[in-house]
Image 1 (tube, helix red, strand yellow):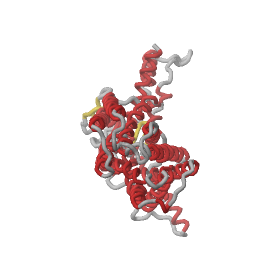
Image 2 (tube, one colour):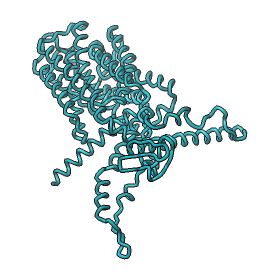
Image 3 (cartoon, helix red, strand yellow):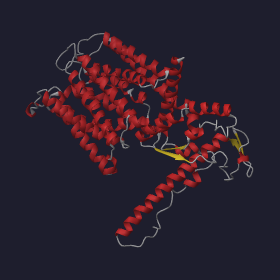
Image 4 (cartoon, helix red, strand yellow):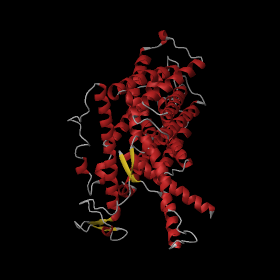
Length: 506
């Protein structure tokens, strides 16, 4: 029985995490009822002098309320909304299911039954839960606009008093957003709360990640010919992070870099795991592993992510697990095929090279997973800039500790061009696009870059660097490409499965 209860608890927690993930990814503003669970589940036994009535029925209702796990779900939703930079607003639940959203008439008789609403004034006939959702959304948005108007009034008042002016309302400052009252009406809850950024931009950003990061393995091959690996990566991330930070500052100002202690801790941790650990070990491994084979080994990133999700109670869908399993099969074909002529690194082959690359994949997976579960800054480009600066500092210290020394006279023109491409184009484009895609798409979908990048890296390695692979290597690459299709389709169906619930809870 205890095992059964634990299983039910894990399933509810998994459902709460997935629902909260979908809400935070697809809605800018989320309004909910400020339910008083303690008052709602209070015992009806009464006292000896005044015993309660219908105690058994009230006890059953209390169990139903507590079993729903509203408090747990709200805690999860609060954390995910804060991490994604969304607004979570609590609205007064009183009379939300009795007030007509069309004409505003409020009466207890409007609620004909538990699930039926019929307005006595205008005759609106619809589901009571939809009426409650629309009224909660309306109350939440009104509270949001009232808070924004109060803040503008206070700011304007302080500014005018500081200049010795009499406090008057500025004629061009509206009380609320134009058209908001007209939008918040019956039947368009999803339209009001849908995220402003179109979904196509997130997929374009993921495509940029595919192409740019697929070419990094070839660029690394030319850089480490004459530049120490950790030192090259350190200066690449320092320059790229500085340039991206300047762009973010010019567009969004200093407010984009405002972070709480928890958000900065997550940013520093991801800077250690993604640029320093992930890329640092990749360039070390590439000394003895071909660029195409290195990219194929990085395909283990989604496998690590699925394991991390399972360990934290967020069970992936069966289709996602199946897609990852197909990718693992493709990875096994590639590794078990063994090295072939022309598949070595710039300094030959070494038995530990592939294992170092797999360890780098573990760092990438952990950093990717951490940024979706821990508090992060609202601006994803500021997050990427600080990540690169943190990773660059760590790699610079690690390179100095390892005894790396940079001889500028020995650096060839090919290494300079490859380094400039990595520091400017890849650092600005790929990391910014990756941070944006991670904030808009499911983590398993973003992680599929590890499946597509190998195909691009293999093609570039063969065409430009003259790398050669066997027929088994090509077969493994085809299986990996099939896996990315399976995972993307599985993750794209997940929002639709929970869409009805999300719309009714808006």
